Amino acid sequence: MTTQEALDLFRSTGALLEGHFVLRSGLHSRQFFQCALALQQMPIVERFGAALAAKVRSLGATTVISPAMGGLVIGQEVARQLGLRFIFAEKEDGKLVLRRGFKLAPGERCLVVEDVVTKGGRVAETIAIVRELGGVVPGVAMVVDRSNGTVDLGVPMFSLIALNVETFAPDALPADLAAIPATKPGSK
Image 1 (cartoon, one colour):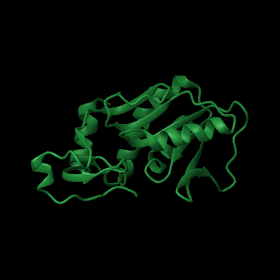
Image 2 (image 1 turned 135 degrees about the vertical axis):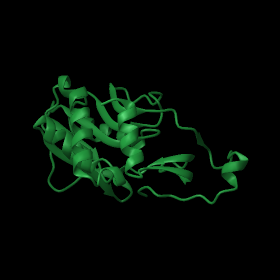
Image 3 (image 1 turned 180 degrees about the vertical axis):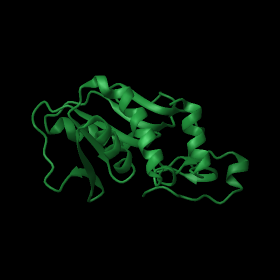
Image 4 (image 1 turned 90 degrees about the vertical axis):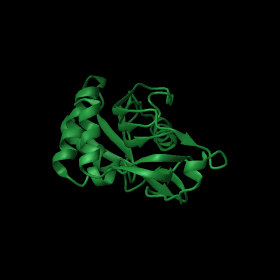
């Protein structure tokens, strides 16, 4: 799948929004990838999952782990495409943790899958969980890399869309963006 094909799927589902948005990172942006709108269509999930699985198959992962909520749908589909186990980290007291009886074996190779990465905070938390439990992270896969590859998570990264989407600190908004009320459409 090419970047243009993936972008076309976002546009056709109304999942690429334009306006003034506050991202989970606290940064502001003119564009927002509302992956949930694209990922509500199972044929699209299957296409994105197959494309990501093809990029990461050679990493030899045995488990896919995603941070909840955003990474759940695409993470599970990548795991299905690769024939692997799927688990997820979720918030407890404001911090990502493994719950629900999920465990890792020492040396278990865990591919981290997320929907959108801007600064990589939730992915970094997920990587730390895997490492703290003795697992290994051979790579990270995502549908959208809003940093265009500038985020360094210390492992190979794979994406379907890699764009340098302009972001702004809340106290450094350009006049046109400051004139539009901000919305926060993503997860909190």
